[in-house]
Length: 121
Image (cartoon, rainbow, N blue to C red; front, side):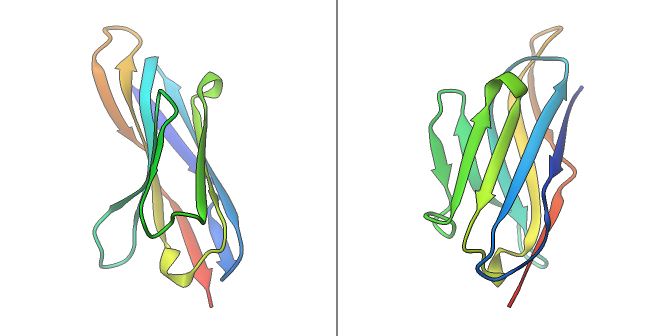
């Protein structure tokens, strides 16, 4: 029972910035990696960024140079700083975490409820 809660979405003009947060809670032994995904209307969900437990980060080509993801392991929290936002960034952004539970130490993959990001022209 691992729960993720995203926050920080909203409406912003093109060229503006938003900072998303995702906090994991529940029975957690360890989190291997945490990532951000997004889904625009009529499109499939795509990977935006992922950070491994070792600290390496991968970004989608469409956001490289504009988005920065960071992680606070002590808080089980991952952030997504979004700069120079474009209308095509409009989507529901979802947080994902993978790791091991704190009781039986089996693998888990948990998703947040999503937060809406809307970028206007």
